[in-house]
Length: 120
Ligand SMILES: [Zn+2]
Ligand SMILES: [Zn+2]
Image (cartoon, rainbow, N blue to C red; front, side, top):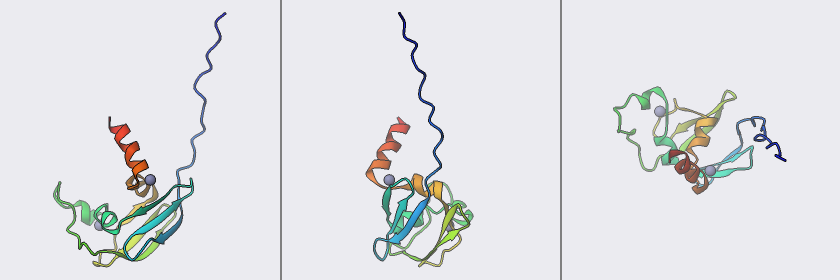
């Protein structure tokens, strides 16, 4: 008697996580609490270097933006309903970080491990 194997469960696609709370962990770093319960601290320098605006992306490949190591966000504001805009202490304020991009940037060990898995 062969039992009919049930197919893989059909998981309805869950909505992408959005930040519920964006606070400062300290003068530099930004802490984000996501709607799926995930919480992570993004170092300011890391975030600044990850800026994906046209100005920063125009730089030659392999050269990240030159960033003041003391850079920190002066203001954090919502950019529409899909992202966050940072005004940085170095005067740069044109970068919008879409939620999806921010989440993919998450520097926590858990997310970095997931990254390593998908790369393999
Ligand atoms: Zn930029
Ligand atoms: Zn994470």
